[in-house]
Each structure stands twice: as C-alpha cells, then as structure tokens.
Length: 465
Image (cartoon, rainbow, N blue to C red; front, side, top):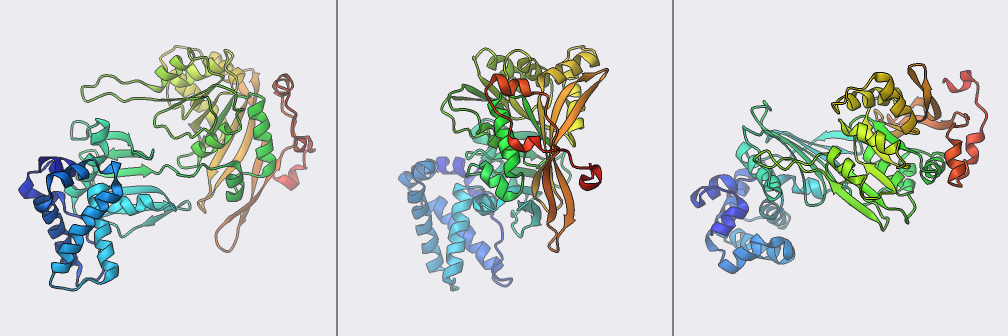
C-alpha cells in the first residue's frame, strides 16, 4: 500500500479518498455532477483498498506497460460503475474511466490538453482558471482542478522525478516534462491567485522550412537565402518577443547545417531537435535543494569551446553568456546560431550590450560594440502578429562599427497590407535588393548568392521603407 500512496501522493491512506484523489468535476450534466464526482472517488477508494501487491508494482512502474496498467484501472472502474445504483451512459462511462486513468498515470485534468496536438501552451492560473493557446490565440477552457491541494499534488508529480522542490522557501521552479515540454511553476506567496503553471508544449513533429512557408512565416526566396547563409557559415541570431517562434525558426535553420559537421547545442531546457548524425546536446542544470551543483549556460559555452565543435548552437542568450558567445564567434567558430528576446533588429544590439555587461567584465561600450559588429553577420527578427501568426519581419545584416554606432542593413522585410474580413494579417515578403557586405564568406565557402538578392531597390513610395 505504501508504494501506491507514494505514487499518488504523500498523504496518509485515510486521507486519500478525500484529498489526493480529488479530481475535477467533469460536468456532464448539472444535476449529475455530484454523482459522477462521488463515483470517481469511490473508484479511487476501491483501487487503494483492493489492489494487490502485483498490481501495485505494475502501477508504480506503469511506464513500462501502460496498456496493461490502463486495463487494470479500467476493470476497477467498470466494476464500480456496474455496482452503482444509477445508470451511467456508455459515453459517460468512458469519460469517467479516462479521467481516472489521467489522474493516476498522467497529470490529472490537464492531461487531455497535453495530448491535444492543436494546443501549443497550457496556462494554469490557480485551480479554477486554465487557458490554452491554439493557433496563436488564447482560449479559456472549462477544465478545472478540484482545489489548490489537487493542483499542488500534480505540481509535485511534475517536479519530484527531477529532484526539484517547490515550497514557500523556494516558490519558483523551471522543469521539463518527460516529452520535453517546458514547465514554469510559481506558487504563493509570490503568486496571489494560487499556484500558477505554464507549460510550453514540445512539438512531436519536427517543423520543416516547408511548414514555415505553409504557415506564412517566410517565403521561398527567404528560405533559399537563409539556407545559403548557413552553408556560408554566417553567425546568426534569431530575435523576437516571447512566443514569436524563435526556437522553431532556429531549429529550421539548424536543419540546413551539412551533416558532416560536429554540432554542439546548449540550452536551458533541451528543445532543439537536430537530424544530423554528429550532435552533442548539453543542458544547463539548476542548483539542487542544498543550493549546490548549478551548471549555467555560460559554463557550458566555455566547455563547448574545448569540444572541437564545427558549430555552436545556443538555445537562448539572456545573460553573461553573450560575451562568451561573441568571443567564440570571433575566434574561429563561424556558423554559430542563437536566439535572444528583442523587439527589433536594432534592439538586439542594445540587448547584447546589456548582457555582455552582466558578465561582470568591465568593458568600454565601444569595445563591446566592436565585438558585436565583428562577430554577428545576420539578425533574423520574428514577430507574432495580432492574428496569432508568426512572421519573419526582418532579415537584417550587421555591417560594421562607424564611429560609435553599429550600422545595419535590411535585406528582407515583411510589408504589412492590412487585414482581411476574418482578421488575418495580409502582407508580402520583399527583398530590399541591397547586396550584403559579407560576400567574402560566401566566396570562401563556395556558396552562391541567391539570384533574388540582385533585385534593384524599389522606390520608397512603392515599398513604404
């Protein structure tokens, strides 16, 4: 019995039916909701009191044979339902069985949301308010936890296997689900509305360049150009706001790297999915419960330089590791890729300056700008539009430091043209026609500039630039 209680929660056995097994009220019918909730609690009680040692062992290690575990749980569900005085319709019977299975083996009421491929993000604002992102837009769901204790039990189920903890002394935690989905958790007293959980789902399908074109993120000319830039070993940073699709675009760009190269990826939570043969994946590690053992992105970047990489991919720079990244780009590690939060290509440069200063090195601003201008070749800026779509709005070349200012040159831009009747953002991708100044890298690596880059600039009154 102790094994089963450990799997399902940390309360004494007599409290299990009342607390740890409390699950959301699946309102099939307003008049029947209490009956269904009581029925589910009875099922949980029967499982705890009647399950034999062999079944407990199977439940504890359910990941090894989930189908068998589901069959065992279903048998208990069917027995209790058959013995119940009120008739449960066939469709509702399966709903009850699914809810119980999700509660015991999964993450309770949010398990169906995690299984829904159309949902890209799940946002839990306390036990009663759960939102999801679908097709770039937020929607409020009717999914609920029974109470705060129930939500905290699910949070414990997420972080316990990772050796992490969350309590009043440590109310913030970042974690990762078994499928790679990123999880951020914040609880009271920092959150005034109860425990809040944000889950950025890990896509099962690898997004290709063709998919991004289908989504309208970029067009074929831009794909051809970016592919040539990767082959020419340009140093590229993908920028954009939160949820703009930076990591997805970085993953697509990384797919253009030739398969014969040694690639080292460095991330807070491993999300990049490279198909090349020679890939070394490194993941940062937070401190343990005693506050020791942390390994930062910066530590991993320094170590990666000793691993003879052909390319270094950093999932995101947000602090002092920006300095190490720039130094790597300036010391022979061409073709490196990373992402950063920024509102525009120009803003990327300011953000990098700030991050370099966060490294603790007392460098003059001009020296930092010299590092940035000599290291970076290209900024790919992505935006989330008001209709929820993501678009690459700028592909901008980082040229040189003139005086005290880094000069930029737009090579592609998205030109907005309003919205249609359904609120979809309309516009076109256009090349500015300006010839980039990094042609030497193209020549050295035997890469030809795509023909569309030779387009003559259109007049300002036609483009609005």
